[in-house]
Image (tube, rainbow, N blue to C red; front, side):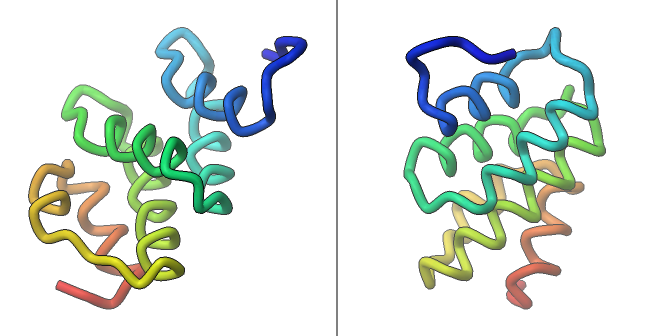
Length: 99
């Protein structure tokens, strides 16, 4: 899904948030967003990672990407972590080495 005039980051976020996109596309989007330090990337990941109806595959990738961003930015939020689904939470903890 490529829309003219949209930034690459915006396109990736839209794929992640699109529940009609294929799971593999959304999983790739979740992984790709881990390479961005933009707040909009983090916010999109947090939204999906806290959705208990979301695919476990996508949740795990969101958690890993959140962990990567938090580690790079040297941030930690126990409050946000507690809002995450178990699959996302496990990956965040594994990636950051924190509990």
